[in-house]
Length: 282
Image 1 (tube, rainbow, N blue to C red):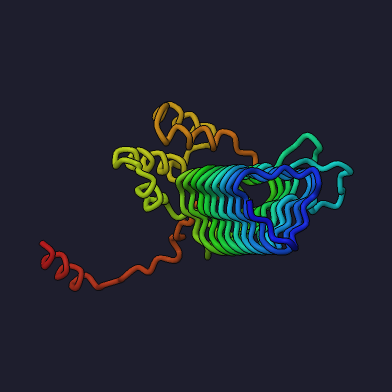
Image 2 (cartoon, helix red, strand yellow):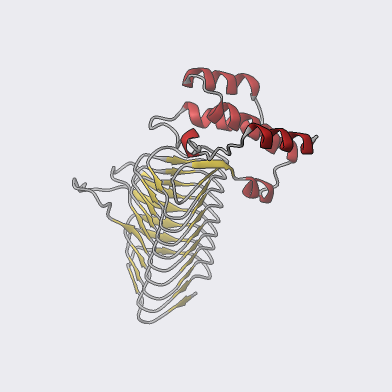
């Protein structure tokens, strides 16, 4: 164990084996630091926070701060962070509001500089949350989701597995699994095909997701009919999770970006030109 002499550690803090704690760190008493964790300089681990094994926490991160809420609880909940995460500079993760509740960050996540995870969030595993992303309270981010820089996620929203949320998006509804959200418009623009291939999804699985995507976004059916068709046609496989996710939405899902007909430029030719073009094509 390597503890810098300027670090301040509460007498009841539980520190695992082979932990490194850098200069000017503050580890309060009601905390737990797992084996093989490395805390760089000026890291603060507040009361009510538990870290698993092998986490790397960079300078000036604050984990376990009080929730930012107008009705501050007397006894807030906890923060539980899994294993093998990389938490970069100035990241903040806040405790849950209720005494029996928990803000959860899974394992093997990369949370980049200045990102914020608010109270009562649940972050899955193998996610990437990029610089300056703002995750509001009670948000759920499923495994392998990618949240780009400057994204603002409204409280109580959900981001599905392997979704790709583009930079500076404004997420005010649920982002279904496997889709890409365009940062400029904040609308869905198709499947996250690159992410799916990198995650090892087979071509037939991606083809199935394309079919499910068309039903979800382009079938022009009523919502309950869409859900019923997804459930009937995709009882297993990745598309089954798409139905499960959408069936649980309370805020609705992010709509697709579609070009309005009025934006299409139609070329007009006189009849003789049109006949010549058709003759040449044939």
